[in-house]
Image (tube, rainbow, N blue to C red; front, side, top):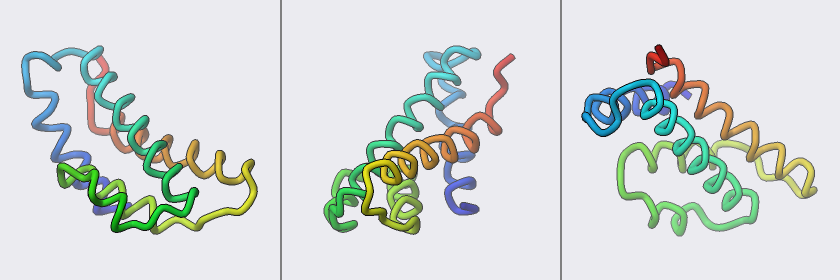
Length: 104
């Protein structure tokens, strides 16, 4: 998770510096968006989509880091555990994001 944490922190530093994202609401929106992305990537992982295909959606180092981190997690066979894995991964990414922003 260290690589992901570093990438999240670096990306957020530049993202929240933009005027359009200034303030607590913008920073919170960034973290929510990152969480949604993490959830979708983990769903792909749990569905058995090959990592190479998922990497094709990667348009930034942040997305690549999230994909790699998701594929480091195990794949589950039951729907309950698959959903739990996606929820947990979303929360991991959001926690790292919220740790780096000042929500005022």
